[in-house]
Amino acid sequence: MRHDYDLPPDWAAMTDEEKSRWMTQERCRRQTRHQQTPVAAALEAESERVERKLSARGYAPVKKQR
Image (cartoon, rainbow, N blue to C red; front, side, top):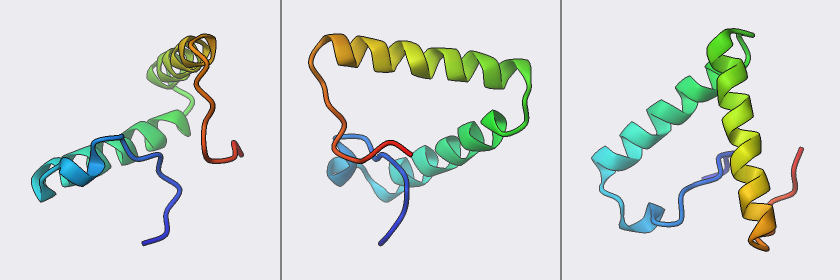
């Protein structure tokens, strides 16, 4: 299955219901980001904060950033 989602590390251990819920939430987050709302700005800020924390801990993403 090809997609551009960054799946959580425990994806293989998740049940079908958990996977479905995660995918639905991820699609909602992506749609919100494209709507230029205050929630989109908050999500973007949170995403950047998490990326900075991971970078400070030495994490390097496997996928190329677009």
